[in-house]
Length: 611
Image (cartoon, rainbow, N blue to C red; front, side):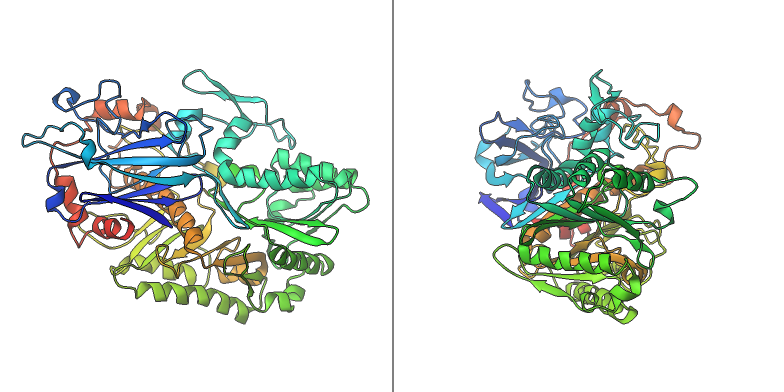
């Protein structure tokens, strides 16, 4: 939930995410925002030196405005941020790739122009400070983790460069991740593991925390569902557990992952596993009706299951370091025991779709609520067609409830979609942007039905995670193309009413389509908890803002480049330097504020909802 502080007329809220903070600001009316130049944001981690968050743009003639000489022209103390909310991810600019976690104080100050359009000096009496915690999210027995996945971003380019390799060009399965993979524009050498820590973010940490817990404690064993499986450091741990007889794996063998004439990564690993395995370790291949699509670790001791890790993240280089994905860890024996039951039924049943769909495990949702787990319901597929329809319709029914809220309704989502899915969920999400009575904000990989933000319109936003081109016009750096690796948006989550007590998030491995629910091994999770829903909402906001920018500026979009522009002719200077060269500067009036107080503009809906 948000922490809020107010002083004078400014209100500031801080929403806690997973190792990030969403800040939202409000001035009560347009009159109070007269001559508003933007907001200066200072960040102070406990025990660390305060620093100002940065803007991308600056004033054309900084010397004509009040400036702090020790700060660059793009510091928000010299170039105020022109948004009423800001997502801060520590390590994006300051603190490097290993940011400090713990208590943070954010101090926000509204900045104003004088009558001649010159920025006035900062007035501390107008400042509002709010304290929050910035750390990987955990609430009682539930932990969340997210991959970063922004290979198509300025931040990735700044750290690693546009030509950075995500894996070696060879097809070696167990390659050494500590080997050098590149050199960035500052001449700094980095390894694959350096990239993986940044890209895998908190999801990677959760995955290796669980694996290393099992590896170090000989009393524990691991049961595992895997779809894509080729992350080399994960494979090394699994092979060690195989030698010790402490792991069983159900591994997908659909066409994508099995080929007798040209063995896949999964085929090669299966051979290595079987050679290493001792009594107690085993691997079975199967794909239910279409895929064994779960991504699950179940940790057990001699008395039974004690912990389960699940979510949308495949245990692969692409899944962890290219895709945007989520992880959930339930440190709850009751939840873990149900997943263990699903594993045993799948194992003994030969990973058979009909057998599982006809069992009690696939017939109805399982409800959990305890001191360790917030109110949660979980369904396991494959289902029969009637059950699959009921499962998906229940999600649509909740979306419809939200769509009738007046004033504070919201649906935020990130759903992978190859436009081939069937069922009621994706059409319902795609139509949401037409509903102007709620805040609708979404991203998918579909390239149809897209609705970008339009000034003066309060319709919702639905962006694509597959921009028409990765070539951006000046003043921006180029971003890499994800090319043949498939998706950045691999999430499958929907958040309804994140800022109300009845908030719910639907997440997990399900693609939210009838085909998957009847033919895939999947788990769909609904969590009724405002804090958890807020964390997922913040993840959606970061992705949607990012791709709304790319979709607008990529070739073919609103801000498409001039005919004949190619990747070879584009400048690759730093973003802020290129902005100056291209004449992109902060204006010296307050016209930018109008949209935030126009009730017919989504920016106004946004301001009121978050702040």
